[in-house]
Image (tube, rainbow, N blue to C red; front, side):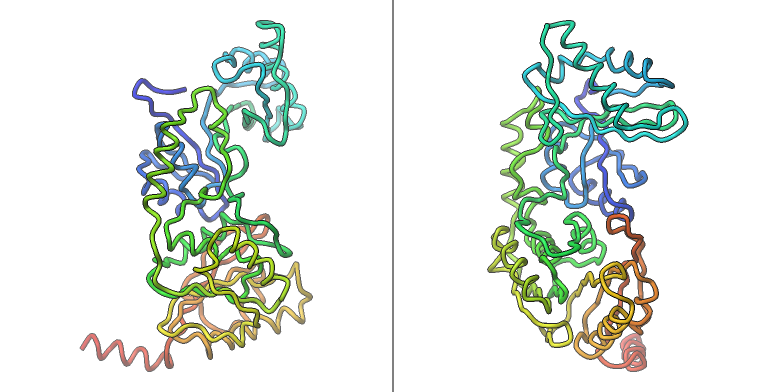
Length: 394
């Protein structure tokens, strides 16, 4: 599993569309051999970087450590191969385990049954060797094992994260259809915002996007609010090294000089956002307002605006068309000097914004195929801008 120099391969899982953002994050932390995969990034790390990636990265869902790979075309071969691994190196009989199986191809079709066979192979090995066996805990295991099977190619990986990394720990309550924290952070990073201007979300819902923006602006690690990680229950957990990683990351937290504005027309949404902002201890850094988008006056000096408006799944078509028309009109009139970003799965409604996007980035919000569109809202007409730019060049 580990090389002589104590480095090993890790696989960080993410949402479709965020692979390059995640790769950039990992590279900035010191990862090497960084390679894009489908909804994942592989990289070379040591134990310190594995801890650091779990704690600091914003766009990873899980960080997996490959354990073994082999070929199997039926459940008996799978059982035998899993049983050949010395599981006593990884856990004791008083620890709990869970198997997450994903299968595709012609040989295996039932992921739950395959997870059961894998679990049997592990606990049977312990029972034969020691007379006792570890038990299963599906919700909060000491060792979470991932099994991926494609046709006859099987891979076993250890989940170093435990719970999905999108569960930051600051979200007390959510409004309907909340955006997940990893996607919210990914959108802020995709926007290119460098925390050097104001940030506005005028359809903030539960407050996830502005909270992630504040964490990015102040360099608060993605895992800052979390209670624990999977690797803390591994046999080789190094507590001193972990404390060093946390301490070094905490030393990098900084102040932020611009405004972060979060607003929503819904009183319930603002109440929820306020609770989450307080849990994240960012109530002095994020300004919350209850008002519709068209009534919000953003701070002067320009900046970035990101909104996640309702899609077709949450509003009937007539209301949706009216909403996107209002978004377009409000951008043109109120947000001059801003770069505005809108994510939606409704391609027809997006056209009703009535502005030409300068960028279109495909991303997924859960199962929904979305576009993340950028609109440059110029101060004055496009003709005036071109004339001004031509004058500056001359």
